[in-house]
Image 1 (cartoon, rainbow, N blue to C red):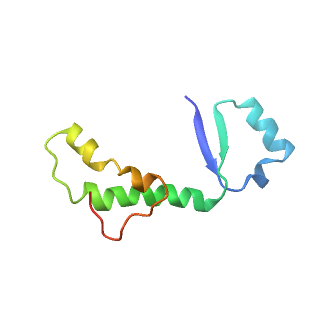
Image 2: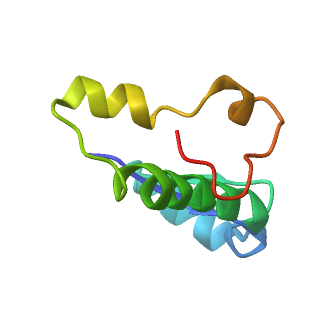
Image 3: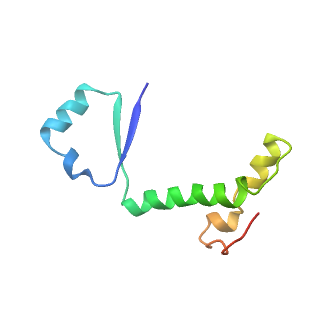
Length: 87
């Protein structure tokens, strides 16, 4: 099983000792994100889905839940969602 770690600042992982350790342990994979704010946006995306769609919804099937919880394409393409909007 592989283990992926998302790291915001790669400075500490550039040392030869760390690089040697990672080479000897191929199970561990470091993924460097452009900035911490990128990870915050991902967390915010899932928070919004949870609070605005999952907690308020009543679903009769998994497919209905998946359809109603999918963000409208406008939200995924640069237009910020309206405050308090519920799909």
